[in-house]
Length: 79
Image 1 (cartoon, one colour):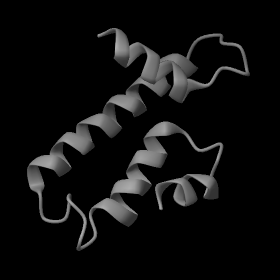
Image 2: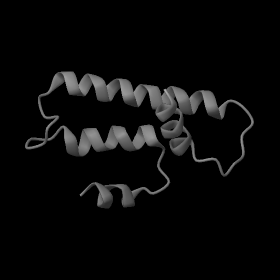
Image 3: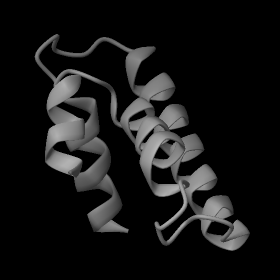
Image 4: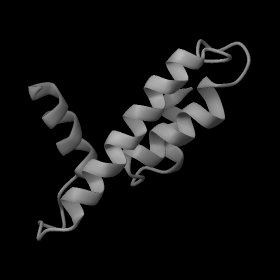
């Protein structure tokens, strides 16, 4: 289901993808995040972190082929 969801917008920014995934799928009844306000808060912080990272990265001079989502995941794995 998530793979089909991701294929709809393959060039979508990571924060936008997470926001849509949570809002359109995971927060719906029969999913783990439905009425789980603590999990929703964690997802909200993740989305905000992705947005801030993208905003910070895109203010500089970067190669146009840079995948910001991939860079975010790699940076997160180093922490």
